[in-house]
Image (cartoon, rainbow, N blue to C red; front, side, top):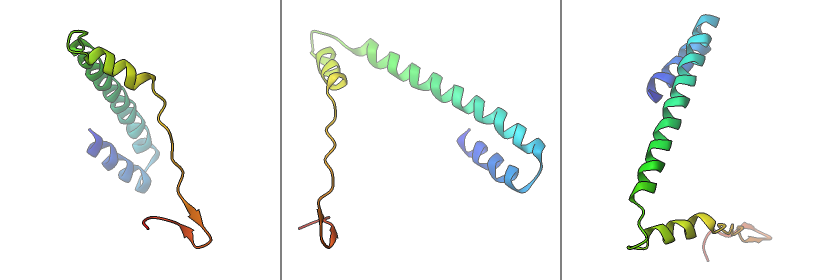
Amino acid sequence: MIRANRRLRRIYRRHSQQDKEELRTHSQMLKNTLKEYQEHRWNQRLETLDTRDHTAWTMQRKLRRVKEHIPPLHSEHGIFYTE
């Protein structure tokens, strides 16, 4: 579906307004399909959680933690990538 969407985008850029409408329709369908897939995967993950093997507790800890962003190191010569 993603390949077809990219192909339609290329065609739309070179051709008519009718192709744009086809691209919009396909893009909306792709968006809905991906959303359904993500919801299905999330529901599967939630169904496998269990308090006896601590997977539920590790999941809630991962969801509650705020990921800390570490900024890059700057110097007078630019950004440090390695020492």
